[in-house]
Structure formats: structure tokens, C-alpha cells
Length: 151
Image (tube, rainbow, N blue to C red; front, side, top):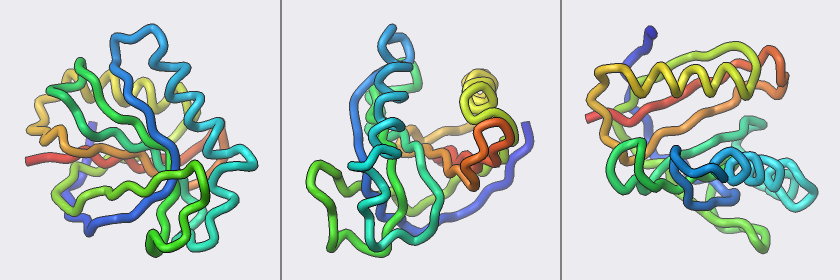
């Protein structure tokens, strides 16, 4: 898989989070539930200071590598954290060095295939923060930029 190395500034996001791991039978339901919350009437539509219309899926607070527990967050980037709706949380995507991948296809299957391939790559990951940034909302022909934190 091809990627480019980029440096990102810190981003502030607001959304919903939960802990899970890749071996949990409930992992799919946990992550899917967070996406449902983000797109519900109690989700990103309430944010008044969004930077853009993109949605983010964020993976952080790893307790080891990708086989251990981590926090998953569904969120939208905001200008600042001054207006956070009730029941939503502020999180930071840390500044740093990332490997940026571009995935195009079905939002669910293309992303799942990407992660399966990533886990077998020899990439010097930091396991601090990784995230998906959905450039459009077309479920069958999505463009997703995936940022993997590297050392």
C-alpha cells in the first residue's frame, strides 16, 4: 500500500467515545453504535463551530499494539472547544508525524480491508493516535484519508 509521510498540527474534535479491542465480539457493534450516535439528531448536526463537513473515526489510548484495548472516537473537527453540546466530548488529535493513506470504495468494507492489510505492514507505528477522515458521505464510493501515527 502506498502512503505519504506528513506532519499534522493538532486538531480539536467533538464526538463520542468508547473502549474496545480488535478481538472483542462486540467491537463492530461498539464502533457502529458510535457512528450511529454521531449521525443521529444528538450528534454532529448540533455542532455550531465545525471546520468542515468531514467525519473522523479516531483510535487512541492504545494499551500496547492493535490487539489490545484502545479508545475509538467518532467526531467532527471544530474550531475550538468553547461550545460542546451536552453528552458530547472534546478530544485532541495530536500534532505529529503520520503515514497518510487514501482509500476509495465502500465505507465499511474498504476500510476493514485497509486495516487488515495495515496490520501486516512493517510500519514503525507510534500507537498514540490513528484516524480516518471521511472526505464525502457516499457509502459505496467514499474517499477516506487514513492517518497512521508513526515514530
